[in-house]
Length: 326
Image (tube, rainbow, N blue to C red; front, side, top):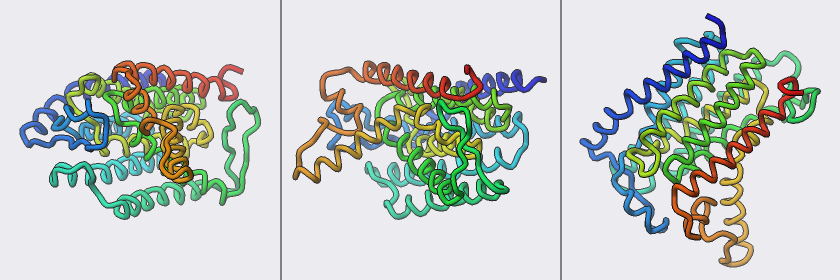
């Protein structure tokens, strides 16, 4: 079986398994009353989402990583990417479990989350550096020649990528289908890029993630029957970071994950401006998707238009890779 066909089979299998397994999980979560708690300060219309089952991202992560290990080339890079993905997913699962068991919108303490994220983030960085003999040649968007930064800067970029991506996907997961759709777009673009580069191990993980997210959208599209929870958002963000870090395409990540970058910047700008001005705001509410909700857009309008933005970022990211189109 050719690598291209194997990639398509893996994606199709991931899609089918999520469609098959997500509904039984939803039914189980409903029986156990594992429902989402909604912040009181959030948009008023979100209060009706209280009690919708959460932790649905568990199926996405297990299916994507499982199919990747079963069909992808068995490389150390793939194993590490899977470990980091599941590690961050486990942190999210613990966070979700505490939320639903204590019936509150806040889960793990910030210090607990930070320690877990730091552990798996450093694990990824150290593994990446262990693969390096003398230097790392990073792919630079729209530049033919790779960049070989000093190793300390490589380590810093890796850490920024994994911490930034995990928290960015988590921030974006505030509307039905938004984070899942944007992740499907970003992971799909990465699968094409890595397939073109012949990196079939990480391309398989990217393709199965994209397909699994598409399958999840069947249940997560508005009105959502299930939320991915921190289980899904932290795991998916970690997967995107691990794939780009280990394939030396980390500088492409802000383009293929453009929506996540914009959402995160909106939060940072809001907080900084609020503190500098003594309580004034740039946006009605951050992250940015809530700003448009409070401005009168319907939830499905916000999601569809933000997906278009994600597609634009993905297209630019695809076009930026030397050797792909130019």
